[in-house]
View 1 (spheres, rainbow, N blue to C red):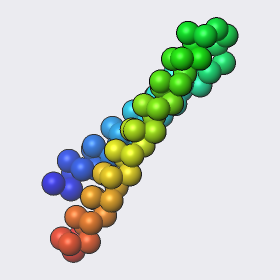
View 2 (view 1 turned 180 degrees about the vertical axis):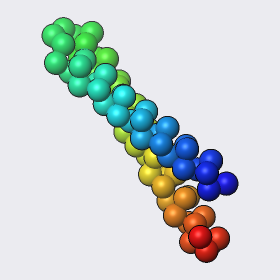
View 3 (view 1 turned 60 degrees about the vertical axis):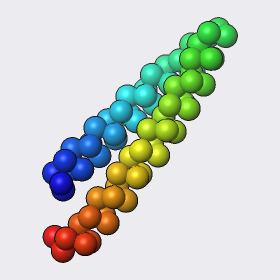
Length: 68
């Protein structure tokens, strides 16, 4: 299970970084539609960060209980 969680952590971190990039691009694009999109992407980023943190906690718990 350790390898799967490690891969999921990397995917979650990449998703956060990609979402952050798109959100910053939308933030600096003029217009109301871009502002709405930026807000949506930043909320998505916060959710993805929560998933990444949960995966990190699960991985640390798993490794501490398995002794590896």
